[in-house]
View 1 (tube, one colour):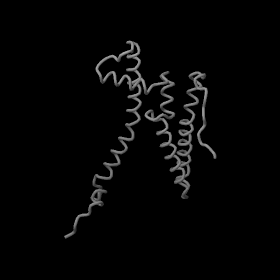
View 2 (cartoon, one colour):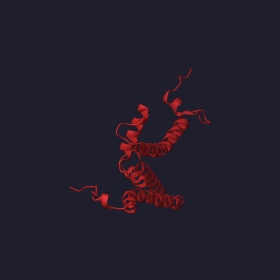
View 3 (cartoon, rainbow, N blue to C red):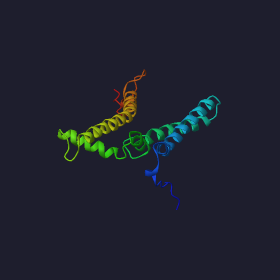
View 4 (cartoon, rainbow, N blue to C red):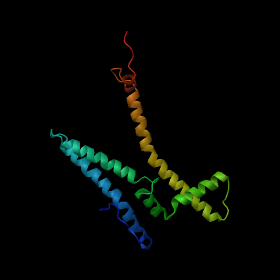
Length: 168
């Protein structure tokens, strides 16, 4: 049976630049797909045929694929890129330890002062990346909600279509 997963071994022997290329290639290809499809959509949109719809769909899929692949919350390309950039292979575990230590109000047992500050840095970096990732979907969903619930110029909205009023 064909497998669509490539097993990459021996990553511990590679330097930082090679690791960046390995983990960054998939998001770069997805971003390139988005860029090429967006340019082709722009070129074909005035021709009068339906080809522009295909490129619009492909550019949307390329952007969404890129956006979700750089998500630092999942163990994907975004998480691995962040761990290579910060040089912390166990970023999630360090962030969780720092969060637990911060919640308990002090230093954890068995950890030295330098380790605590390093864990706090990891927590802040991981939290920042998570917040940056969550902002666009939040604003997008809020925009869609406002668009569909606000009355339009004709007075019709999605909420008024869902619950029709009785006519006298």
